[in-house]
Length: 72
Image (tube, rainbow, N blue to C red):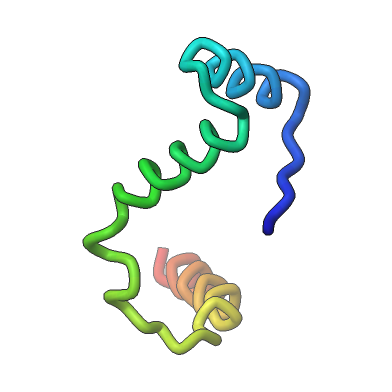
């Protein structure tokens, strides 16, 4: 089970939509999550990055900027 914190506006919007559809808020959110994740069904699990690469991006970005500045 997951809990979810929403700001006041975002809390009211799905509640109103669920009411209009005659669903509970939980049903509405579950259906929305299914529909949203279905958009990614063809790519989820396709790439296994094995992690760790994000830690190196800051240094790589700094190197690219330094190189651009020295050649510019």
